[in-house]
Image (cartoon, rainbow over all chains, first blue to last red; front, side):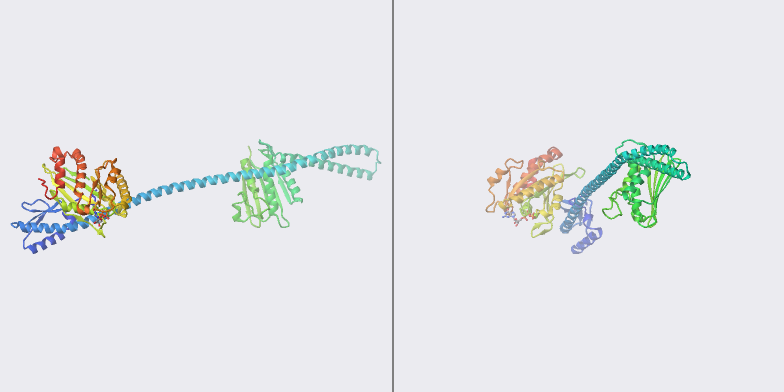
Length: 376
Length: 222
Ligand SMILES: Nc1nc2c(ncn2[C@@H]2O[C@H](COP(=O)(O)OP(=O)(O)OP(=O)(O)O)[C@@H](O)[C@H]2O)c(=O)[nH]1
Ligand SMILES: [Mg+2]
């Protein structure tokens, strides 16, 4: 690589045209013809720049003219050379500064890339942390909620169990007494009718008491919150107990229509499934604001799956909201009315059973939630 | 630089006057131009200046011919001392074979001397050289000024460095300039001789080298 200080050649300093002009000017001034060559000429005078011989100048027969002309050329070349040296130096330093800038720029880019990577890493870590926090919160909510409901259910079951027990046995004893009494009564038509009625009343009461006992058993299932292993569950039965519980909590007769078909037992967590049903039904109830609303609860057995459909003809969910109904803490209800975790918990529970949850909703028309479980 | 072209039998060396602004580098070179009568001497080129301060560099080429026809040349440069011209300073310093560091003897200039010396070391490193290996002479200039830091003190301070003994100069009056230059030639020769066998191959002894390149009027350099 050439540097600013490399000795220049003659033609680096003056172009052939300028050189020719310069020479002819000197020839005119001296009235002699001159020859200028880069190669050595015999008897010629060297033309130097910085001790470097650039060319040979020859003026035949006139060494004095030849010498003066060479000095004049050197004098001019000296200024040309000075300018060139300065210009080359300027060029060199500019290039060096530019190279330095580029180096710095590359270094900056490298460190910027490093920082960007770091910030992306941080972002992923923050995201991961947020997920963990959300999940923990959800689990906390779920278990607290389940515990509360479970405690309530356990309490109710305990309180009802005894009275229902003696009501059932008393009713049986009462039936026996009734048989004994009937033999001692007159054998007329009115008495017969009355006894008939009495027996029907008693048997209705017995079956009522049996139903109460079933509910108590269901409640026990529901409240069995710490059950760790999958047990065979009947989704229909769980839906039944959940509906009862829902009615009890809303202190009203809810417009629930059950269209259940027989299902094969499903391995799962009964308490969690009940919780999921409860959350979905609870939302459905809250969506029913106008008169004439109804909630249909459908169960279907298919070859490979069983399906639970919970459908309401309430307010429906707006399109833009549908995407986030499963987001934790998302709720369309006024603040305080719910934590927003309901559907998320339901989704997690279904996921834990390797099932899927599907939402279809139209604003003003209603909402349908389909739960699909695979038979094993 | 040691620009050695065997086919042309040309050896071009580079000596650089380095130092803080206004320490007298250009003055040193002008005095060398006036005082030296080397075998060959080119024109002194003082490139751009502003208020007498060097913007690019100054250059004086001198030379000698060895017995075997070696064309040996020495290009003597000065750098711009002002801090802002560092890239120019670095370009001029690049491939230097020897450096004469011109320090200012005035007490108030001692910080500038130190900064410039540090800058020299830094630039040498950037250019792939080390200050310990480069032939280097330290000259304290402006000895004529009243209040100059005492010579004994300066010598004491530099005693333990590889650059003792120091050269004292008053470049404005031409004192000590040629001596500093000779001191550098003395430090330069062994390295050149080692590399190019100046003595055995070219018939250029140390004495010949120094005398031919630093002869002054009245001295005979045949
Ligand atoms: N008194 C005194 N003045 C000096 C001496 N040497 C140089 N000067 C003065 O110091 C000033 C600067 O001298 P220069 O030779 O231009 O300094 P420089 O080191 O080339 O400065 P830059 O080109 O800016 O780096 C001039 O006014 C010189 O006359 C000296 O020995 N004694
Ligand atoms: Mg200068």
